[in-house]
Image (tube, rainbow, N blue to C red; front, side, top):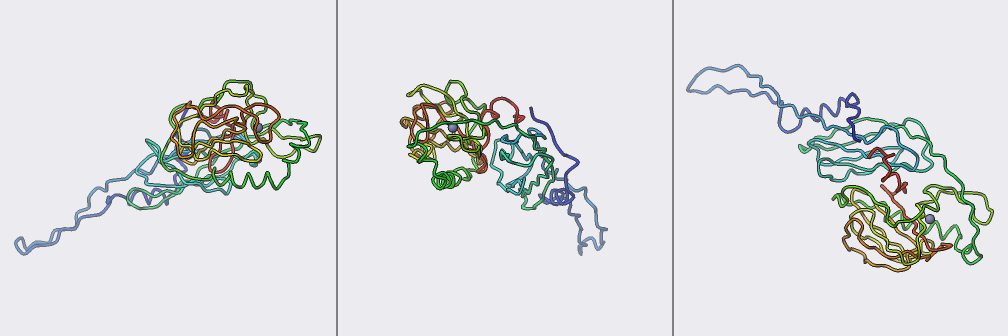
Length: 313
Ligand SMILES: [Zn+2]
């Protein structure tokens, strides 16, 4: 469900920028000629108003770990959205420029301003102010007992290095929209660990948030792309094991970890549901399952909220 939002929030600078765009608003002054010998008074013409771009938000309340879809419709060339001190560019959609604004698991609940900067087709710049309310998600705690061998992989530096490398991939931006339509669960199976759960390994205090959704499935089960895109990574990582990352365009990515083997290579375009690899237990894993991540603008978010309607899209 989409709705128009915050028309009253259009800033004067946006209206000014929009109103001056596309050559509208110039009065024409006729110059006297020798043949007529008469000077005509300046004639005021009716300016051709360029309507300000319209901001459409999928929801005005979004959960920690969720994402809100921000679209800017009108004669706009490019833009960016700033929310909770993160600025991300808007990608090119079919009818608008847009971004999925990912909300971090620890984003402070409450109302926060959102600023959209844009450049009109005419080159004029403007901005719109809006806001979104972050609602609290009640994260559960998952206690996990693992072997000494796997515990060695819990070296914080190892995890931090992997996350840094992965965040670099997840922070990429392809302006072209590569996804379309609905999002699908990559492999059938029960959810064994939800996105965002806090984890306690071998009785240690719970920390962090689970960066994806764990889906229980048998070793060798085929894993399909949650939506169409391009494979930007297919390689082995220390914790996530064999991992495929798909770029969906507009700053949105999906990741598939602990794979037994790959069915795609880097650079390959994939259709929605296309085979990426097979469920396995490579990396930091206690048994065959798929660890499915979604990331928007470098922020990991709950993939299930792309399917259950709670993001408003
Ligand atoms: Zn997992």
